[in-house]
Length: 358
Image 1: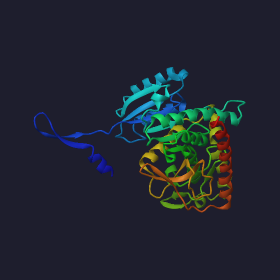
Image 2 (image 1 turned 90 degrees about the vertical axis):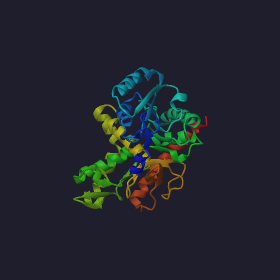
Image 3 (image 1 turned 30 degrees about the horizontal axis):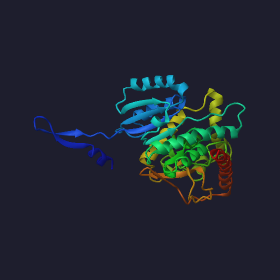
Image 4 (image 1 turned 180 degrees about the vertical axis):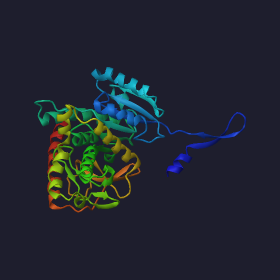
C-alpha cells in the first residue's frame, strides 16, 4: 500500500521541449486544529505535527491555532516560531480566537484547552465550566467542520468533556470522538519496561480502562513483554504480583500529580508525545496483534460498561476506524476496578448533563 501511494503521487507530463518527465503530485493539505494553542502542551506538540510525525511525511498541513483573546499576543510568537522552523509540509498557520474560523473545514481537531481546576474549586464547578466550553466547541464542530473530522479531547476532565462535545455535534458520528488515555498507556508501558529492564517497545498490550483520573485502571493481565527475543506474559516477566496489583497501579494513576509536584507544572512533553501517538495510530492504524488504549464511545461494548460514556478501552484501528478489542477474560480483581472507574464516569456524566440542559 505504501508503494502504491507513492506511485500515485507521480504523473507523466511533457515539458516545453516535448520531453516526457515525471512530475510529483503532492497531496492536498489537511486542516488541523489545536485549541489552547498558546499553552505549554501545544508548544511541545505543534512542531511534531508540522514536521510530519503525526499525519505522514508527505502530508501537507494547515495548522489552525485557537485560543482565548488574552492569549493572542503569545500565539503570535508561536506562529513566528513555526514560520522560522521553515518546515516544508507546513503550508499555512492560522492563529485565531474565532470559532467560525477555527473549526472551519477541519480534518482533525485536537482540543487541548479547557478550564483547569483552581484552588478551592469543587468538582461540580469544574464540570460546569467545562460543559460550557465543550458545548460551544461541539456546536462549532457541528456547524463548521467536515463530518469526517476526527476529534481528540485532551482537556480535563477529558472523558466527560469528550462526551459533551459529541452530544453537541449530533451529525458527526460518535466514533469520530475520542479522549486521550494514551499518556496513561505510555506511563504503564514504561513502568513495566523499566521493571523488566527492557526498552518500552518491548512491552505491548497494556490497557487503561475507564476514566482519565485517579480511578483509571492500568491493567497488564493481557500484556506481553519481549525478554531476550521471547514474548512472555507481563506477570511472568515482572515476577512481582504484589507490585503489579499495588504500587504499579497507583504510580500510573497518580503520575500526573507527581509531575506537577516535581516541576510545578503539569505534564507537557509526555502529553504532547501521547497526543502524537494517539493521532498517528488513528490515522494509520495499529500493528497486527497489538491494541492501544483510547477513550471512546462505550456503545455496544462487550465488557458490561454503561453505554452512554466515553470510556477507555483496548482498541485496534484500521482505515481510521477503531474497534474495541473484545473477548478478553476479566478476573474479579479487574472487574471491580473497571466498575469503580465506570461509576465515577456515570456520576460525572449525570452532573455534566444537568448543566448541559440549562
